[in-house]
Length: 297
Ligand code: G1P
View 1 (cartoon, rainbow, N blue to C red):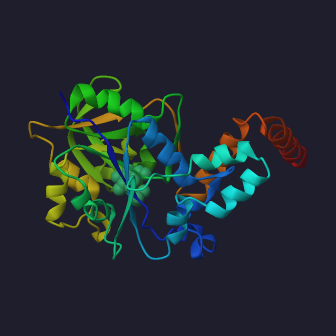
View 2: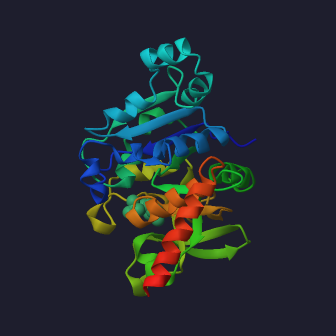
View 3: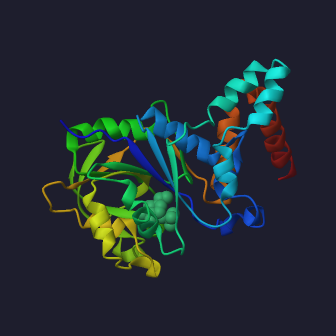
């Protein structure tokens, strides 16, 4: 029997400079898509996949994140007094039981691999998930759950993967495919942010991982890679050719790059349109904007 994946690491230490000035005082992960912060989508996805322990790798200025997952006693008692049961239900999603959530600090921004390594003492000899909250994935079956199911067959380490336009590949970790089995591919190489001419394919790593604990051992070496940072991709690549191996998983769903402004706006529109309470008004507005734009041309 394969060990169950019950822990997930959420690297949330980034400065979020692309969203300044907002991120001067608001952690990027608290920025909202419709009415839920980015981090809530990531947590919901993890829960759906059977994750029981949530490990946040944070940095200075992220205390709003800790408060978000704390019980808001005063707010809750006010709502209870007023009989606002629906809102109380909504708040429940944000509550974490004591001990379910852990915070470790990354003292220096040394890269994604380093951020994951900061959580090493909370992971024992067990597979663990990593979720990058910037990558928001809308899917009928949540992406990490799809991966947990695929991982039950493959073992090893698994990364979410998606074909991107070839000219965009150098913004990602990129997979060199050994065998393409459809949704699962076995991997014979992976490169972080390759130069355009060096990209082995256009199959890019997206921010969902199920990793063998050996990856943490590779991170112990603190080797730097692309951009002078300690890269998670490089540590995973060390698992290629071991008996465990590395797999890419083409998930079913739509991924939004909420680390970019355009991606964030697209996600906002898409999530707005999927909401019964907002759809009609938002669609009417979008149609109006498009009509005005056409008329102006
Ligand atoms: C990180 C990873 C990269 C991956 C990407 C997905 O890069 O290092 O391998 O393709 O997330 O979003 P970042 O976007 O943090 O530069």
